[in-house]
Length: 303
Image (cartoon, rainbow, N blue to C red; front, side, top):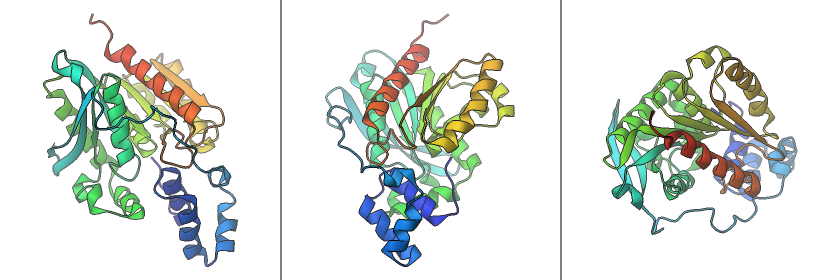
């Protein structure tokens, strides 16, 4: 997952995730550095800030709530420490024929509108999809209207708490009457990518996993992974893309089912179409590969 004690790092990360625009980023950094000139100097080392502002999102990328092929609703269900808040998107085909599921894990701000959109995209692709708000123990993302508050709330959660909340979300999915209970995949973005890795290290029953640019597990933990996994990164995100290589090598040596995609010219957060690092071409290809990977492992013939 992404964590930093540097407040400028955190602001840049929020900018990449679409929390605010470039002008607001410079304004917030200036309040910390004392002037716009000092802010410009502080931000000059970040390639994602020097790049062009987020381009327009191509038609057809996002899936609206009114899409006639899906149904959506906010849901609540029991968790380890109380009620968990989630967002469920269901393909209408699931009411006539059971469908596989996909658990979608958000970035480090809680259950944002962007992650709800990704959840709808998964449903549009034919999967019963659920995203859970990992800020639920603190009242949910609605209790934190400001992006820095959301990020701070996420950083107050622990890995054990997140793991438990995701396990309860998986259990909730297994009991939905429109889902194939043992054909559930998991995907996550940034912090959610790290949580995806953590989950498959600890729980073998997930049928497929696609972590996007998340912190990789320890090499020693690779032996515990039973889940087919496709790791997705951008080559400009050198911090995470370099760390994934020893994991892929360990997966290969252990003969684990895995794949790796590193997109040339793509930065951290390139799939988030609300953020500054959005790369439309890489994001479209990565999502197509994600759907194909889930189709392969979640719809395979039973043996």
